[in-house]
Image (cartoon, rainbow, N blue to C red; front, side, top):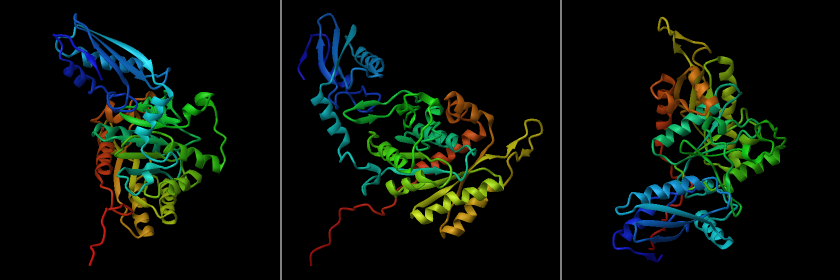
Length: 384
């Protein structure tokens, strides 16, 4: 791109600075995705940068402007920065979609043989065990580890993830491609932005519509190169659990339960579904475990004892493979409060026992390598 050079400012340094500016939704430098329109350097040190927005109502226009201003303003000799915003035309958006998508629109990238994304479906036998709170905090903890993380709120009827992560902004649409909002470094999609009536509007979907909604979340959303994709499943073994197995056969199940025996009995059913769907159970998480008495320090088993270990043991026996207890998360009212306020515990109170347990589980799941099953190794037999 031609640049009007002055004798005091290094034009290459300005370009290098702009190459560090990432689009907040696409997470790629604006110089790589056709968003940089022009750069003009005046003799008085003013640098005027033209930037293409993907759509006219781009919700991140102020963020993009601030990022460009900060990056260019740090270049030696620059006295002021002017950002002029324009909007991509149809051809430019089509090119951007082609650049980002890189595959057939109907394909689910995570289901392809060469995908390196680890996919975890977080399941529970019943509601009220804190599954969504656990999922949200695991996602944020993994993102804090430096991983690229996506989260699908697959609980279509009872979606709660957007509020927990403060990701309630509507996604940006680019040529039919959905750019998901981000919360604490996690890309999030749910039914919320697709309901004109907002949070209080109910979702009245039958089975086929649930399947289609999940398919759109996986195929029509631009997720980028994810290290980990988490799905917050609805409780039980219904349509979404079965559709997840069909659409993401490589997804591993993580079962969340409480220490209570009654909850553990139900949680086993969520895990044993994997036998029918030919999926792997990555492990069991026990939420609301014992916590120390604030007065005497003795453990308080508010919701019983041993449910997580019991579920892991029964699933190991039923599935004929080792299903570990990934961790026990102590009961902590701040975990609930963080979900209500959109402030995940692992960030707001990282030293709390519950946050420490969640972060340890996140490290375990985030560090697990994918197996080679189903992946093309690019090998051909040697000719004889």
